[in-house]
Length: 220
Image (cartoon, rainbow, N blue to C red; front, side, top):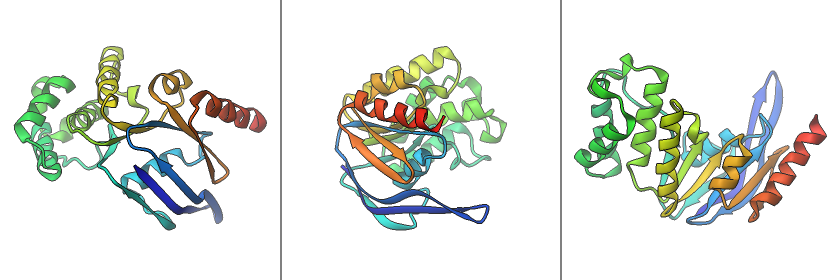
């Protein structure tokens, strides 16, 4: 499980304070796929980054009893002078998994061809995302952090990515950000609605979507 304790995050924007998390106390259960719902700017990606550890809270803390992925598809930590294969092998060493096995999985999944063995600086943004998504899916995490899982690559690759992700959800949980309510219903069994620095946890996804839609209508 992942636990948020008195979690607060405040930004200063154009001289004004913006509270995106106001003293959150929340538990994300083990093995459950939870959607983060909210309007643009409600704090979905910020909360995901705090759980990943790539952004610090203003106060409070986050702790977990299991392993948590980096945000799936995020390629910002790759070294541009190393090849895709070398970056994947480096990740394998960091996470303590078998390097040959992970590299073989990513090479087959990402479909980069000869580019897999070329420096990352030669990659397009889409190729970087495919490499990062493959590396994420090749490691068995207890919880996957996902920001728009099907936004990577063409339609064929997006379909393959979703199939692999669904397979991982048979054994793991996820915290999932998407603007597609159809995808939220398909992939998630619970949801958190974020609004004005508050978060409400729902065990019923459809109830959460109704709350989220009401927030959208009242702000229109």
